Length: 284
Image 1 (cartoon, helix red, strand yellow):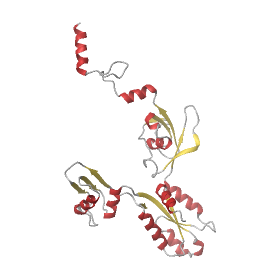
Image 2 (cartoon, rainbow, N blue to C red; image 1 turned 180 degrees about the vertical axis):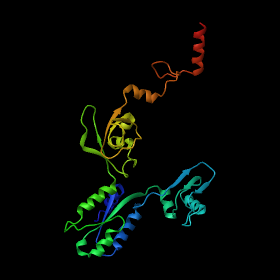
Image 3 (cartoon, helix red, strand yellow; image 1 turned 30 degrees about the vertical axis):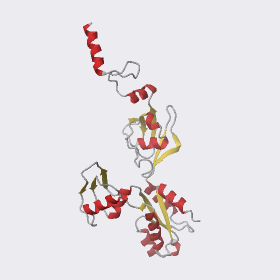
Image 4 (tube, helix red, strand yellow; image 1 turned 90 degrees about the horizontal axis):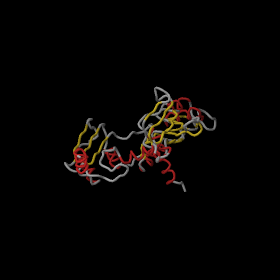
């Protein structure tokens, strides 16, 4: 009845969660919603723990904590958790102070870390002191839908927290298309603002034919500038993608010519036989 599965699926694929709360009631509704999202693997306003787990073929569990751990997390606890997941050989590196739950999230590797803005509605029913207190809470915005108070501020805050990067595409010999940009956020694609992510969001098959990209905008020193896949783009940049020709595709597929194939074909020739042929040709 409440479309729970649809809400969960949307929350796991969204760029930002907007939690609308009633300030005239207690904060139990906020805690309850946060606990429900935590139960399905969604972490609000948190970053992934800076922990690296690399599976190895032997030597057991090698534990290395760069930062002092203050939450009773040591090598013994680490080994007991990894054994439950049938991981007996791995290199574990901790670069921050974490808890046991944080380490389990890293091992599961299916958690969603997303920003959440808490919107307190009905502020027209509160006094000034209470509104000021709510407005100073982290990641919170106060509004009044009935009185249309601070709706523009809410829109500006959403734009700021989503970190939207709009990339416009351009075809050769034509003006850029400013009507339908590629929208990149820290939650989409490979979560980076690179040319590679923009191309994959446009069409993943184009990565196989990608040769270079011409970029206009604030991310380059000279407009246009030829860039590769790992160039970092900025908001409202214009990108023109250049594909490989058929000959370049064949060259990329076959690799560098080494002289070990028959000219004009893919027939392999033994390097020793090729050397003997050359020596006979020189003698004759």
